[in-house]
Image 1 (tube, each protein chain N blue to C red):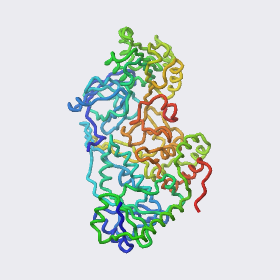
Image 2: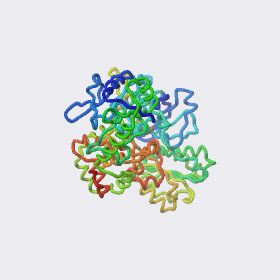
Image 3: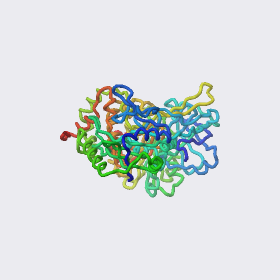
Image 4: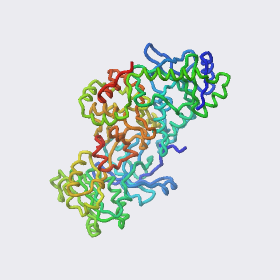
Amino acid sequence: MRYVKIYKEKVFDFLERLKNYGKLYAPVKISEKFYDRREIKDVKQIAFDYNRTITPAKRFFIPPCEEMFEIDIENAEYKEKIDEVEPFVLFGLHACEIVALRILDGVYLDEKYPDIYYERRRKAGIIVGLSCLPDEHCFCNLWRTDFVDIGFDLFLHELPDGFLVRVGSPRGHKIVDENLDLFAEIKQEDINAFKAFEEKRQKMFKYTGSFDNIRYILELTMQDEIWEEEAKKCLGCGNCTLTCPTCRCYDVQDIPDIDGKRGKRIRFWDSCQFKSHGMVAGGHNFRPTKKDRFLNRYVCKTAYFYPLGTSYCVGCGNCTYFCPANIDYLGNLIKIRGAEEVKNA
Amino acid sequence: MHNIYSLYKCRVLRAYELTDDVKLFLFRFEDPEVAEKWTFKPGQFVQLSIPSIGEVPISICSSPMRRGFFELCIKKVGRVTSKIFDLKPGDLVGVRGPYGNGFPVEEFEGHDLLLIAAGIGMAPLRSVFMYALDNRWKFGNITVINSARYGKKLLFKKELEAMKDVAEAEGIRIIQTVTRDPDWPGRVGRAQEHIKYANTDPKKAYVCVCGPPQIYHDVFNKLIEHGYNPRKIYVTLERRMKCGVGKCGHCIAGTSTFLKYICIDGPVFGYYDIISTPGLI
């Protein structure tokens, strides 16, 4: 892998130049508690020390609502609506979100049925990763998704006097080559600083060990009382799936125009926490109770995603952080795993 | 790149009432090129769209041996199916597919075949049955058990009744039974109670089951009691797929060690998949 360094004083220049490659989106503090990824006019607004944004990066690739087809009702014709996507740059994605995008790639761009709507956005999106320090909700280390080796164009690792940049794609090389005046070669002290940062980061995680066996434990404890009790707290609002970087359920609807001659087919985000999600024709529901739906998310998130060799959950902690009922997703998994491991100091 | 959600235009050729709330539709592809190439396996389904009303997944119930045409059995239960129900010959619809794994019919070849249907479950199994009839020499004895609550609700009642005598001579047994109809002149009782009348050899028969989720466990128990091989029992499941291609997540079922998309990993599952995975049925 190619490594270069960028000094602190050149970082804003670099961000400014990123705008040449497309619209720049980066995390911005939007209120006392929350950050969100917004289009950047002034690069000084960008928050480097954020932990999570209120909407995950998936929204740039699977919009909350999108038009798929224009319908000519009389002739039963569905004309695909595929617009060109302007290139854009996503700055500041953490490792977990980059893994999440790769999981979405596995789902949306599988060999047999690649999704063209997702693909054209994915091709247009330049990904610039950013290293992070975990807070008490982060547990990517348990899923082994705390470090990424592919899935980004550039990845910035914090150093005391700048960033160590990993170049992860041909597009990343191109960006570096075209802006060589901003980058420097790495020195031994940078390598030491990088190692020190990684070590410090590992020590900050709340729990150590791994969740490799959690899916079996979950399967064996599905009848336990804890799920009954936790489900009672749940409001069924679907916030957890909305903020989850890998939740991708969608619903499809045909909407006729007022003249009844034309219409459009749209798809929009759905959530397994809604009662309608498991309903089939005739009124039978495969997940009739709140407990069924509550547990379904745990089951789905901990399940093994074969193409990537990881679970669908990446350990970002969004679902816990944004839950209005204070349901602790990580806490529940730790509870069923039993024997709480020694906390990191 | 091809858009996987694009639809083929199809025309309704015939709408035929099977019961008061189920109709059989015959469709033809408008594009001759598609008509020539399009093929499917028994047990697969299509996504049928009524422009600006919506899209529903429906099992194909005709034989794949007849190219360019396919039949769908529609029960009037919801918003979209009610609209489909009103379609007249000549009307246009959008279709994409076929999706799903289908029944492993190649594996069935050379063996006896027992088909057990309850209610609308006859629709996907009719495809298997028609396929077996079209390839009669490849199969041993065949039994179809078609059941419903009332005689007037039996799907394909007339069709199956009409072929009964010829069929019996050909090693094909047709059993039609109802559970709650005192006026029905024929057999009564649940489908599983008639397994003993089948002409199939339990040791070498493949079994396909389709019906409402509640019946499966009883049927399985009866089949195993009669000596049928659990490894050779297949069922086809139902979900409300929005995409049919493993994206929308509506048909995800199973547990964390066995999470399946019914639309691409199914809808046909084997007996052991079903019993080791709560939530599948």
